[in-house]
Amino acid sequence: MKHRLRLGVLGSGKGSNFRAVMEQIIDGRLDAEVRIVISDVDNSGILNLARDYQIPSLYVRPGRFRTKLEPEVEEDIVRLLLEADVELVVLAGFMRVLKQPLLSAFPRRIINIHPSLLPKFPGVESWKQALAAGEKITGCSVHYVDAGIDSGEIIAQQKVPVLPDDTPESLHARIQIAERALYPEVIATFCEA
Ligand code: GRF
Image 1: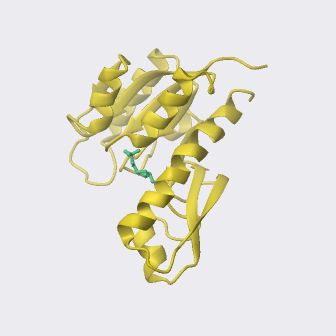
Image 2: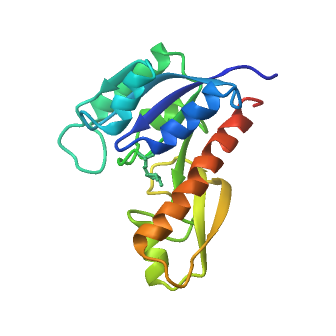
Image 3: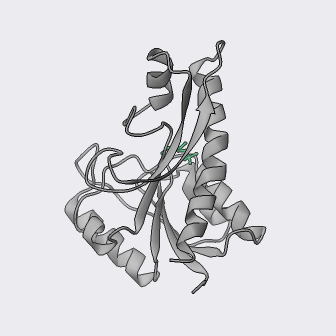
């Protein structure tokens, strides 16, 4: 049965994917609501955007690791997401790998968008990897999140051409346009799940 999907968003950066989701919600094209935005980066663009949209938002101190969260911090995040009654956790530029207890609290309910046609080019700056590899086509992927780096089951992909005169910046910009269309589309499919 269709219902308004309750989202929790985790991000570390500008929040352009979060903005794309919000624009579709506001336009009535995506039947969802963002209940909470959580960031591991204080004063990040995504937190400022959440405040502009008057959505509850929170900075969590990530702890002593660079690429993952302190287990206690993950516990706090699980609690916050459950208190906000979140059904689907949407990673929007969240730069840390998730572990337990987050993964087991939301089985097949945490998704991420990545700027390549996975399994090609996981990790950082994948548009640069695609360019260096001489790819003619790259793109973006939405996938379920597991404990690896961009390794979870792929849900949907959008191809993007690599043009002969592309720079890393021009290619990244073209991929991001595709991301902002694909992510809300995939989220919409969870409204029916
Ligand atoms: C996105 O473009 C996505 O590819 C990756 O991180 C980037 C974050 O951008 N996962 P933003 O914070 O959504 O603007």
